[in-house]
Image (cartoon, rainbow, N blue to C red; front, side, top):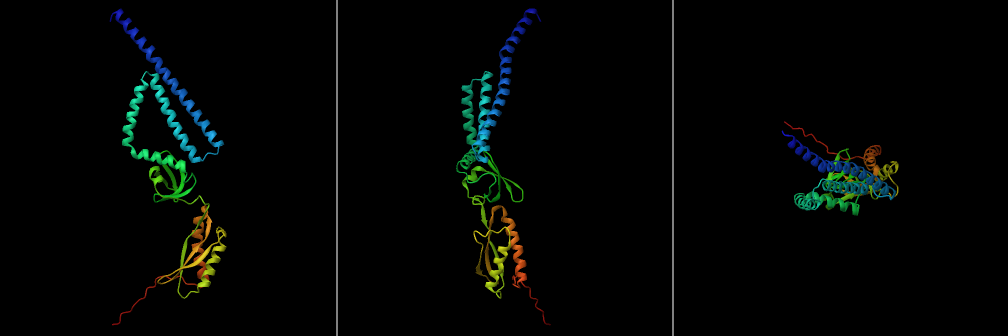
Length: 273
């Protein structure tokens, strides 16, 4: 290779490195500084939300949304620094967004559902809810999904679209719950005595509220039993303790009072030869 050709190649390499190398270095610097700035913005925003007593679920949702928006803006800035025409990129991004939007209509519906949940707030993090056939405590509300912790410590993930369009039962909002129990006794039992025994069980349980007052009433005269509707009230977090405790205590109290709980009897018929 001649000296002249070497000089030409050297000149080309230097020009390329000068033109694009500086752009790459600038893009790396912008990425590092931009990422640092985004973290600071998110931290400051979180601090402002905390001082303003924003709901925890709303905080996470908005911070997630702001984070994605700033990252997209940073990427567009990087492409502009590298010499990619941002106007052309914006047009391509819009076209791609339209195509992706049509392909991911369900995801967009979930995003819209998440926005609706944030606006109307049918529940918040920590609430016990029942929705889409699942029951659990709200663990996290994200852009597209809501995570619940099930009663058996399962993680349940429900899409926000179906969640916002379906029925939601929030057990936490009112702070108290009524426990609906039914107990049956034999037809030979004295109704008044049975009601007194059942009411005493409710009064003796430490987690049963006396306001609202618990009730015991005859629910129905069934085929083989007189069924009583037992309705104690309790704090939401004590629901299962009251449910199981009253069930166990009722059996013991009825046995002690000599009141029979009916059950199927098997009658043996002897064959006569």
